[in-house]
Image (cartoon, rainbow over all chains, first blue to last red; front, side):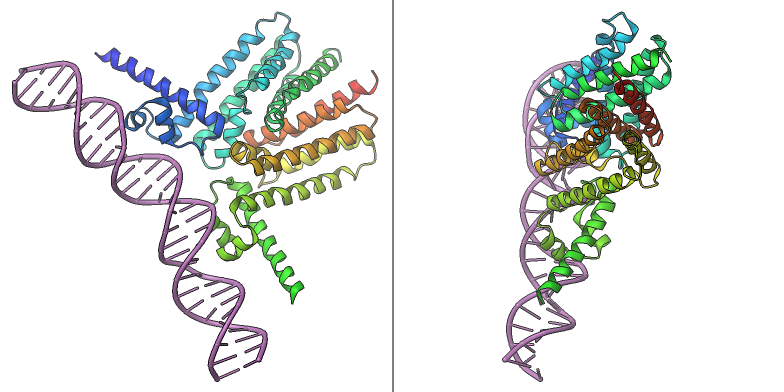
Length: 192
Length: 192
DNA sequence: TATCGTAGAGAACGATCGTTCTCGTGGGTA
DNA sequence: TACCCACGAGAACGATCGTTCTCTACGATA
């Protein structure tokens, strides 16, 4: 049946992406071979290359799927709050929980850019897409709180700095520090 | 003569590090082979391995030498200003000039951590050393401006976010945005 | 001048990696 | 039942990379 084939392919792609995400995020992209992904996913190498004709495509798909989930999870957390200003600060609560998770290993896109941004245009493009989407989400939250776009951009920079620093230092404290800074910026910007 | 040998070795190491820095910073570490560094430096492979017994050592030395120069250049720029608060903002002027340079390719340490932080302890250590030194410099500037350590940490996060974002977007604007945020934080923190 | 040690140029080695190919098997169809 | 094809397992291939080895030439010393 045609739809059964499509279902099987989709399920196999999910399994491939699950393994790829676990390995790429934890150990970096270049240090994980396709053989390892085959072992971890249980798929044959032939099937893997049918689904993703090159490793680069698998990397793209990994970043794309993670982007959707990452931004969805963030939005779900943020929208548990009603107050528009509180929603901005909720970003940093969520980041703090993420930083403290045992498998936290920094921002997947900052890492991927550091690793392949200079050599792979598709990867660089995927990173830019994610970061502009995240920045737009933050400036959107600012606009809904009657705050200028400039504040959204500043909060975005704080979030980026917190992610980079939490990865390198291995502590979740940058989230709280960035939250305090965002709070100060909001109150300083609120009434000019 | 003994000292002549030492001088020659030091000069050769400089040439190796010059080539390594140019190539590693621009194209990433893993995508540059030792053969390329040999060609670019004009040194023989044997001499290269006498000076740096493994590629990892050359990477360490690259990060270490760049750290010294980066922080020295920053300090020289900052200390052209007398006012302690102005000195903090001068960080972002310097970052803005750096971001606009034609060969800017992000923060060498954030990039190196994304590429090798998970697989190379010496590299991860070198990145942590650089970032803690930079953070201490910023909090020191804050202390000299009678501002709390928390402000220094917030300014540090803004600088990190600006570096990561300038790399990914390819524009120098994050420096100005971070500078505005730092200015707001300073005035909001100055009188409680 | 004859010799010895050193250094450079580049071949060679062993490992790894992305990708493709071969082989064997099992299930669906006439 | 006999045939065919699609798939999985894993070997194989070609390229690359870090590192070492070989060979040759040269310069200092007795």
